[in-house]
Length: 481
Image (cartoon, rainbow, N blue to C red; front, side):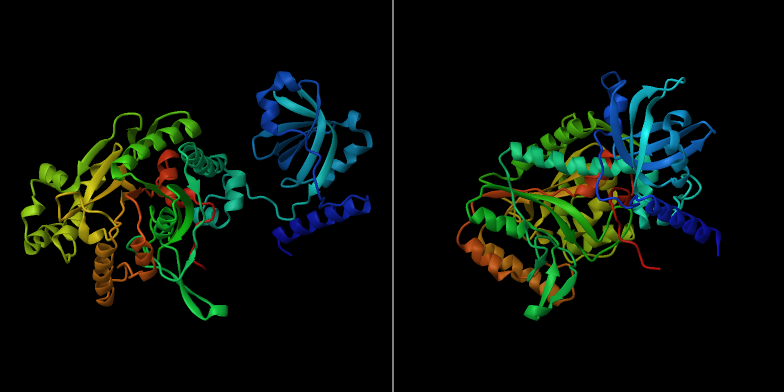
C-alpha cells in the first residue's frame, strides 16, 4: 500500500470512528449563522458573541493544551482557537479531524494575544469527511494543466484564481443590471439549431435521435433575437453559450459565452455609445476603478474612445489606399506580410488591418466600416457599395466584440445568403448558410435595428488583467490524456 492509500485509509477509519460515536461524517445540513468575512470585517459588532461558521479546514496546529485551525468559506478564512480545559471531553475528538474536512465551528468571537480575530471554539461538528488529502498549496499544484483539469482544487487553494472567476460572475451580473436599467428584456435562445447562423464560423454538429435530425450547436444567437424584434419586442438580449469549431489558443476557446443584444429603431452609432457606457458601468460597479493594466499597458476606460474607419486607418497609418487597389495589388500587399491571398479586396483589407494595425490599438478603440463581403447581415453605409455599418471594439490590441446595424431588406438579405451559400459549396466552411426561415421572418418586416456582441471571456480577461482565456473559464476544455 502506497503512502496516498495509507492516508486515505486513515481518513476512512476516522470517518468510521465518527459513526461509532453516533455522528454522521456526511451531514445533511449546516447550522451556520455567519460567513467569515462578516466577522473579520465587522469585528466590533461580533466581539463576544456566539457564532457558527462553516467551511473547510485548511490547517491545524496542536500545541498540547491549545490548538489552532484555519477555516475557509466562500468569503474569507478565519482562525479557530481551541482550548483543552474549556472543551473537556470534546478535546479528544479533535484528532478525528483532518486538513480538508468540511466542518461547522461554533464559538465566541474574540482576538488572540497577537491580535488575530478568532473564534474560541465551544463545538466542532463534522459535515463532510475529506478522504483525499489536499495538495500542498505551493509545491503540490503548480502545473498549469493540472490546475485547469482540477479547477476545484485550483479555486480552493489559490485565492487569486477564485477572485478572478468570481469577478467574471460579477461582470455578467453587472451586464444584466445595466441592460435591465435600459429596459432590455432577457430571452433564451436555442443551443441546438436546425440551421446555424449569425456570423461566419465553422459549427459543431450533432444529431437528435428521436427526430432523426442533424442539428448544429449555436455559433450565434443573433437571428433568434431578430425574430424577437419582428415580434415587437424592441430591446432584447441574451447571454448565451456559443460553440465554434475553430482554433484554440490564449484568446480562443471552442465554447464561450457572449452577450448579444438587439435594439429596434436605432443604428450602430447608438451601440457605440451604449458600449462605452456599459464598460464604464462594469468597471466601476465590479472593480471600483476605470484604469487597468492590459497587455502591460495602462488602459483608461473613462476617456473618450477613438473611432476609426478601417480603410481610413490603413490609408492614414500605412499609406495604402485599398479603395484604389485591384485584387491583385491587394494580395501583393498581403504577400509582403506572408499572409494568404484573399478572394476580394475587402477581405484583403481586413487581413491587412488585423495583421498591422489591430495589435497597436491599446486604448479602447471603435473600428468601423467593414467590407460588405464579410458582413452578410449588415446594412451598407449610406452612399457606399463597399462598406457596412459595423464596428468592432479593440482593447489592448485584442478584438472584444462585433456590432452592427442589421440588414432588414429581405430581398438584399436573400441575395447575400445565396452568395454565402455559393462560397460554402466552394469549400468555405465558415460561410453563412442560407436560412430561408429567417428570410421569411424578415419578409414580415423588421424595423431599423442594431445589435452588439462582446465576448464575456475576453471582457473578463481584460478587466481581471490576465492574458489567457483559460484563466477566466471555470472548466476549460482540455485534451484527453
